[in-house]
Length: 160
Image 1 (cartoon, rainbow, N blue to C red):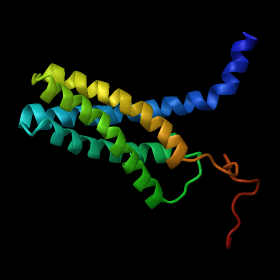
Image 2 (image 1 turned 180 degrees about the vertical axis):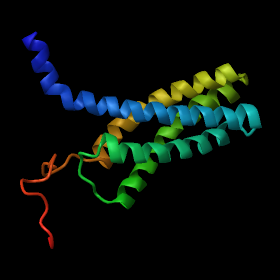
Image 3 (image 1 turned 45 degrees about the vertical axis):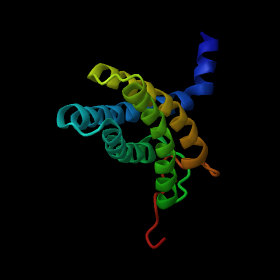
């Protein structure tokens, strides 16, 4: 029992961060998945165009969720810089989805909704691994100074 407690204490911040990242990612996935199927299967827009549009919208949600909840304890290096890097890295991660959907649709010649969605899920899974690693490394960097959890004794003094 003591070993489990020490293990949890050592990795608790990582576990919490991964849980938050996963929650935001799950909601972003639902947005992406729903829009992707609406655009491609229901409306009939091409599979790759549908993927780009759905990913752009779900990425905007994911940025806000990750910046202001998952990685809020990390240093902020400027909204423009973070937003640019976030979308650049998501653009790279989008390639995983584009490749799996393109391969399934145009190389394997599978045009049914099930094959389309399986390809999307595989691409999202690969992209998620890349995104988590790259967000921590380049977008939401580790704070150089500890970020205070609460206000100091006496609160904030007026005029400062």
